[in-house]
Amino acid sequence: GAEGVLLSQGNRFAGYSMFVQDGRLHYVHNYVGIEEYKVSSDVEIPEGHHRLRFEFNSTGEHEGDGSLFVDDRQVGKAHIPRTVPLVYALAGGGLLAGRDEGVSVSESYEAPFNFTGTLNKVVVEVDDDSAGDSDTAARAAMAKQ
Image (cartoon, rainbow, N blue to C red):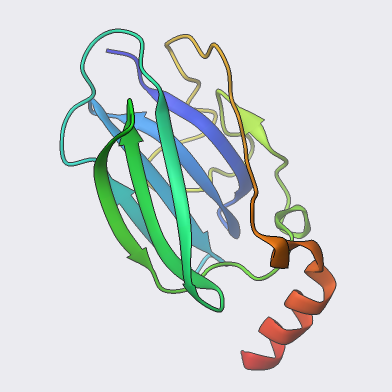
């Protein structure tokens, strides 16, 4: 019966959020307040302790496929056609675990949407070598707009 935000960064004007709502795992990528791209699990999360995970696999410049996992079992997948090419701090809203803050990232809930379960550990891994030069990536993305 637990629900709420597991991890969020940014706000309604650019950001992402991973959360549990109505028994299912969700991930929303908010593209500069214009569009929300959502990945939702196709099954409910069973009661008890679980390892919940979101993975993003790039399929091109500033786009990719998002996948949700419960205990290493893929439970949802969707294409995210556009991702925010800038640092989320420019939009406001730092990296938060267990809640959202201020103006919520997603229209699916109202902040703070505190997680009502227990978070034992939150891990964020970035394994893309191209993520290092955010200034160059931002300039290139803005030129495409």
